[in-house]
Length: 186
Image (cartoon, rainbow, N blue to C red; front, side):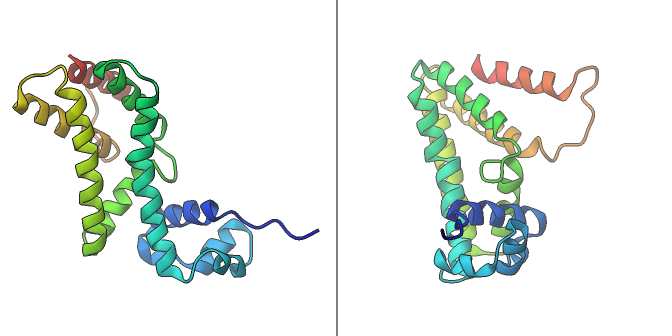
């Protein structure tokens, strides 16, 4: 009986973890193999080289944070407010995940500052996210300016909450996040 092969997705997830920990320079085949507890030979069964892995990491991230999330939201049906609530729940549940997590998002944003192709990919992801939010908010908010404000707040809170270090007065961070959610859904 042959040895079980490490699935392609595990290499991608471990690559994203390495990206979060140390940027694109930390995504090294030998280090990933060591973290996965396997030999690096298995890597080449899936990827031509490191650049191919980096591209697939971005492909996976892009799909998971846009189309997969949107499909998950839409599959539950409901009006726009119900879909926004579902979207906020999905995003909150994935906050620490290796692919959909905020830290992966932030690491890719940092990488995009130094790589034009990654910056273009990030722009495409952000545009898709905002287009989807816009479609939901505009169904119950007729003011186009208000829709844009809500979109910016929603995306900014998603990304910025992880970086925000201030205390929240008498409220917990969770309470403040719930207040933001309520205001966005008004």
